[in-house]
Length: 126
Image (cartoon, rainbow, N blue to C red):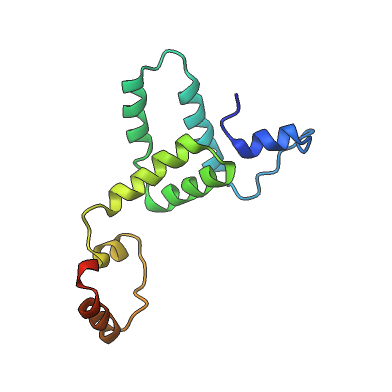
């Protein structure tokens, strides 16, 4: 069974006669996807071993994590997408909006005055 719904549909639709184009996925990221998929089809891997392996696998630098997340989304590999989304969610959990912006290098769209106004109007959000 093909894990990647994108590739599965290409094969079923006859779009993959000799080459499957993966223009949105770099080679290094594709090799990580293949490593993940191989590990998940190994018959001798127990559920606990697989969970531990997944945790170690998802310990990535932020750029690699997001490239892999985009590849999992593009290739439509649900189990990998779920793992990586949970990893990002864990990075966010318990952080203030400012800490989240720092973690993910997100620029604040608001001036200090606008942010203060929003904090005053919606204190529950902060």
